[in-house]
Length: 253
Image (cartoon, rainbow, N blue to C red; front, top):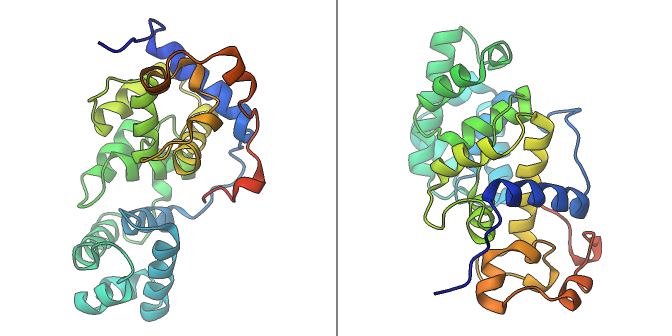
């Protein structure tokens, strides 16, 4: 049987936050990266799609149809063609139109600004009731745009949490949303940094295949490292970078 750590998962989760906060440097909540409507629709487009292709699909969609009403009224086949750089345009096009239809029908306009006044759980339920919107998409909108105390868990956050031992090895992404959130302060700034830093770490260091364990500052308490290389030695820890070096490449969006 592989050796496992006895350190409780909540301690690992907090140590992950502290170490990656130093490694990548803290972010602030000053300005949302995108408007709420753009965050919602772009995140739908981003499923299994690169950021560049998601951005291209979004831009082509608005260029072709002008505004949200134009996107809603467009022939679905033409919308699918406009967003063809996404993974499943024929599936995403009708979903986007149904989301827009429901927002317009319930709110009278294409806006999500009302979510700022709603409790987190109410906003989460409202968003996830719509087709194609899961916990990750809803959590991103609520955290990034409205600074709600909620944690988005994408494939990178999920993978790192499993490898390090913050969650059970077979815990689903949906389960990870709840477990990790219970292990962290209900502080939107902490949750934003935990999400973004682990997202970057998964994109650039803790890769799906061939993770760069030599560069990883989490190796001192990571189950994956322990199982593959044994306990991290003092020499290995001393050789581990303490800060992200931009010479290694630009961080994702």
